[in-house]
Length: 336
Image (cartoon, rainbow, N blue to C red; front, side, top):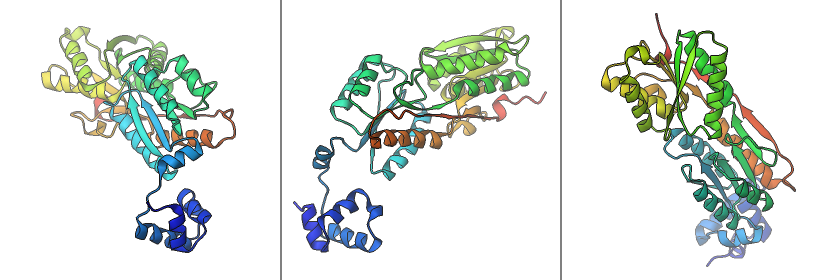
């Protein structure tokens, strides 16, 4: 097997220069980079990553613990994370326990045992014992839009309270007076914040009422089920505005209305979602939504992890709060 020493001899450079090229190539001149790269290609050198991790004490794996994998938003955020991680020579892995706190606890214990480079927690279900474990083992950890307790860890979050308040205020401005909030797992921090924001907008709007429809999850299928239930009501008992906790639910609700033909969007019921995933604008009725900046969100979380990993101590806690943006399309815009 070809070693770094062999590459150095073949390129007629010092061993330290090869090491610098592999770890911080920007510190090596372009001419020297070309010589070393040519030697690596000619010899077929492959870095021994296991040995590198053993020497450094940590792997180059950064792990995202996601809330759910069926929500396109997390896929789009993960793509931004992966691009940013690659710039720092990191490998991004993704796990999700889909709300199972015990299974997530097993994942986190395994990640600590593997001494991963860092962990980004975005599930909202991590137990105190696992947070204690991450903190006590000095594992660089960032809380992503999911946790109210951020005393010990850096965090990157979107102001979901304000985003939800803007969404419901928009429905009220469109003339809606009977608004329904559709969303599952109210104990999840992100969803609870969106519900609080919606309730705040209702409290400031005279004569407007809101009901809550809980769902088992936040999928398109759950949205279809909620839409079917609303369609079966008498017209006077239906809401005239719906704020869904995410776009998957909102798209499912609109699909149900279009399929049954009993409800017109937005004339009978105005609908607005949350996240503004890529296909929101291409739904059966172009969906109004609250946009969470995916690239800024994903890259920001990775930057906080690398900042923690490079710090001499884990005491430098920093919090980044990103403001969402209301995107108005046809699903919530009334002309009358």
